[in-house]
Length: 308
Image 1 (cartoon, helix red, strand yellow):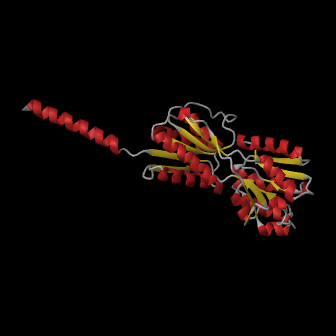
Image 2 (tube, rainbow, N blue to C red; image 1 turned 135 degrees about the horizontal axis):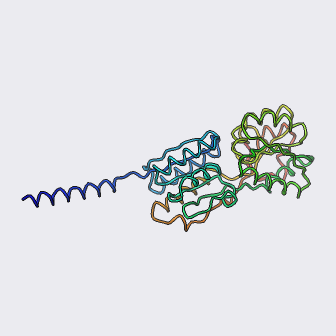
Image 3 (cartoon, one colour; image 1 turned 90 degrees about the vertical axis):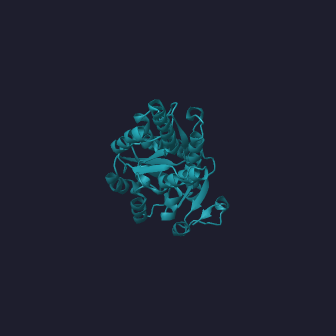
């Protein structure tokens, strides 16, 4: 009788452990370096892909570092302890997460050049948002043929931004544009940098720099006061008043990353998944801003543009 009771207790314990394992909620931590529409949209797309893939009920926690790398490191360390998977949105967030763990699967998105950023390993993959910088420079030449000097403000502390500015310089020089740069290290320096830069240039270009894109209203206000058109890098900047951009769809990029997450949750090993890119781009022009600068929207070069 005693033996039967012991066996019953053991069997119940095994059943409870099994049920607990089966019912255990998958936990995904999303680390985002700063709030701005492009990064926000990648998270929206990521969640949609999980839901479409049958994982709409998993537990997703989103934390924002508000532009501070030390905070991103704290978030990454916490997720390394508590989560089953990490989505790192932007290069700084990805670096912070990868510093924290080499075991938990880390999916990255909105990262321009993972290799240069040191984001290579058996537990990390995802999607790159490499901007079509060549098309963006050609866009400046097409819309503003008289422009000779293009300005750019960027965060010198973000490797992603330095890579983009290096690419911009090469592509601009190919089409006869002189680049005037102004580096900043915090959001508080942007206004002064713009005041110094805008009097020297014919057009301002804003790359997918998290600090600068999150300051788009200030950038547009300053540029508007000096009548300097702004060519942006994401659709939301054009919606806010930038002249134009040639860009990728960040929600689609996040969705593509979410599809990779589904594959991992279904058993695929992340180390066998190469980093992916989104090939399609779209040309977007702000009608009101174009009219302000006398740009002909019937021209053949913008025939397929989305006018907003």
